[in-house]
Image (cartoon, rainbow, N blue to C red; front, side, top):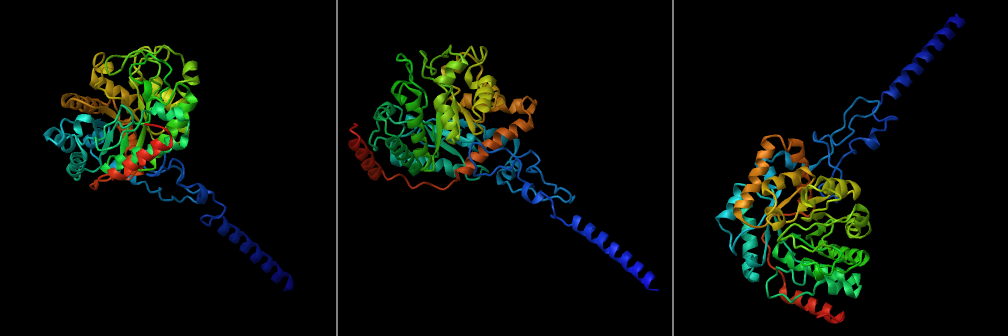
Length: 443
């Protein structure tokens, strides 16, 4: 009896041990790495910087299956991906174009560009801006006209200081950036950037095509000159990054330009196509240095210049060269932010190429936003060329979504909206400018 009883006890114990082990190995999360790794690969936050990784097209966010459990974890939330999914094809295409407008008031052409073409934003020049009151009314009117559109507008200017300024005459003048560079003061450069940012943000402007990161290595350069911080890549890097950060601290998106370097040219790209004969080794030692450092410091947007670099690409200018945009900027410099072209209506392009085809090639090479600063017909031609390229499959749906996602992510990061601006405090800004100039012996 006792022997049989002991045998039964042993059998029962063995059964309990076996079932207990099986229960532990099947418990969700027990020994599984999914709690640490699930859903993190490829996730991209709407507020992330230029180096964010784009999530997969299916919105899965990467690894979602828990190892050993067979269960699927929910994909991480990505409001930018959700926003992209709600846009029509025409709305997506519009986000890839930033246009100019005629006059000092919103006209029918501008309304059509917003309501029918769904453009991503506007650039303003001196002839669009008369004084503070008019400029504020114009910018707020554009925001109001865009209120029914699914994505807020970029409202942009070239505000570098010195001779490239779009601000109305009520503001005190800022010196050329060469004068700022000559002081060697990064603190001053940062405060100058802050002043520029305050001027723009007060108007509701949210994108500034500055600072210039060209190294002015050619004294005969007809277009850069004192717009550059200096003749050495180190000073251009330090001062340019300080201005970039000063602008950004005011909630305005800085655009570093003109990649891969416009400093050693003898032709103005507004009029013709400059040719730069330097090879990659020379570019790495001089022209690329400020851009590489700005990328490491988190630059959000890079503007591509209209330059021909035969040793890199003898057939295409930088502004739609895959060797320059994808090979040099995207891959070598590891820039994952937004790439915008210089104005496609400049002589370098329209005198040598079809503007619509140039725009399509720019996007295929890795660019995100085509700048078309003048001429309503040219703006329409660019939009139509992109539309036809998408319809024909030349620009695939995957490429279209990739380019647009990048733009939407930038707008989300800076929280662009349609709220009317109240206007800058001109008197306070002027006091700050005069104080800065006096403290540093500048005029």
